[in-house]
Length: 376
Picture 1 (spheres, rainbow, N blue to C red):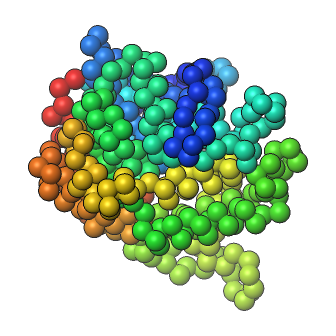
Picture 2 (tube, rainbow, N blue to C red):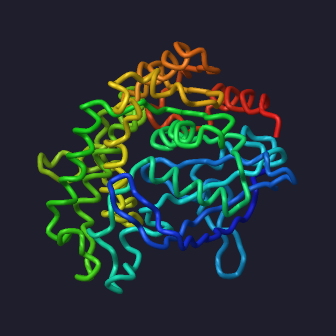
Picture 3 (spheres, rainbow, N blue to C red):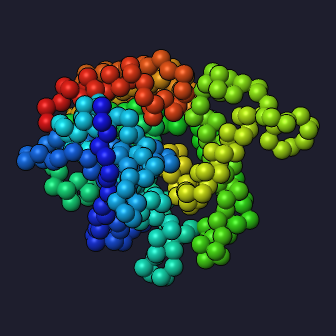
C-alpha cells in the first residue's frame, strides 16, 4: 500500500490565554500540526493522533527539501496512516499536533517569552495532559471540528486519548488507548526522575536558561535518553538483537564502548540529544508523572471514567514492562464495571514498549477492524 507522499506542517495561532492546571495562564500560543486525508462536509471523519514523550506533529508521510523533493524525514507512525492502512486516509481526516511545550514548532521553552523578549527557558510553565487536551480542543475549534470520530495514541499519547473522553466527553466518539496506563507506577516515576536529574545536574543546563549561554545540556539529555530507551525495549529483544556481542577490536578492559548494546544506546542518546530540547524533556516527563484521572475520585478509576461517553479500544503488548498489560487491564476493568463500551486486545510482540510503533500485522489488524466500526 502506498503512503501519503510529501506533507507540510501548518501553524495555528491562538490569542486567548490558556488557563493551566498548575494555576498559571499561558498567553497567546502556537500549535504546529499536520493533516492527512480530507475533512468531509459534515466534519465528522476527523481522527486526532496524540504523540508520546519524544513525538511530534509529523505522524506520517515525508517532508520536502527546499526544492520540493522528499527527504528521509518520514513520520513516526507512517506505517499505520495512509490509503488502505489502519488509519485510512480515504475514509478519515487525520490530525497530528506537536504538544504545547514541545520543541518542534509549537510554543515551548525555546520560544520567545513576550514579557522578556528572551526564550522562556525555565520560566515556561509545567503543562499537564489536561492542558494538552484543552489546547487540542482549541485546535479542533480552529479546524471546525465539533467532535472527533476518534482520538488515539500510544504511551503518553494514549493517556491524552483517555483524558479527551473525560475533559470533553461530548467531543470524542471513540478513544484508542494503546500501550498506556491509568497512571504511572512508583517505578516509572523513579525512572523519570533519574532521567531528569541527568539533565538538571549537567553543568550546561544553567537552571534551564542555557539558551542565553549558547550551550545545550547534551550530556544530560543523552543520558536521559539512554535510560529511557532501555525501558522501551524488551529483554528478549535486546538479547536477540545484541546479546553479549563485543564490538570488533573490543577487549581493552577499559570504559570505552565494548559491547554492541553499549554502542546502540550511545548512538540513540547522541541522535536524540541532537534534535530534542532538554526543557521540553523535563516537562513531558512531569506530565507523565502527574497524570492520574482517579486522584480526585479516591483512587477509584471506575468512578473517574464513568463520565466518558466514548467507545474504547485498549491495546497492550505482552513484552511491554514499562506499561504492562496489567495496567491496560485496569482501564478495561473500570470500563466494564461501568457497563461502558470497551474492546481489549493483548498483542504478542517481542518489541517491548516500542511495539506500538512497529508494523505488527495482528496489532494493525485490530486497529483497522475497530476503526471500520466507525461511521464517518
